[in-house]
Image (cartoon, rainbow, N blue to C red):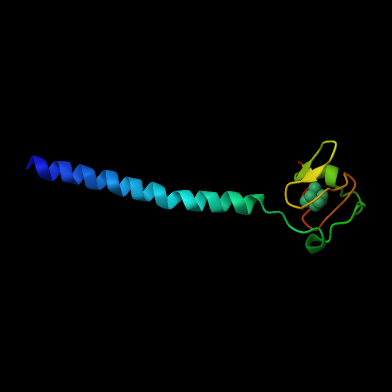
Length: 89
Ligand code: SF4
């Protein structure tokens, strides 16, 4: 009887371990996907504003000496714009 509870416990530990191993690659892949940025041309990025819409008013904008965008690759201008512009609240 004791052997059955031990083996059940071992089985549950093994199942939990397998489940955690199966989750790890999905997390790694999603981090890589999140790190991938889109090409400027694909998003019709331009170094000039589109009306009042410009990068420094966008939620994706990362200010700094070399401003970046969370979704567009490469250097961007604070006065730039692209198709995925999303105004800050
Ligand atoms: S998503 Fe487009 S508009 Fe917004 S900061 Fe990035 S490049 Fe500029």
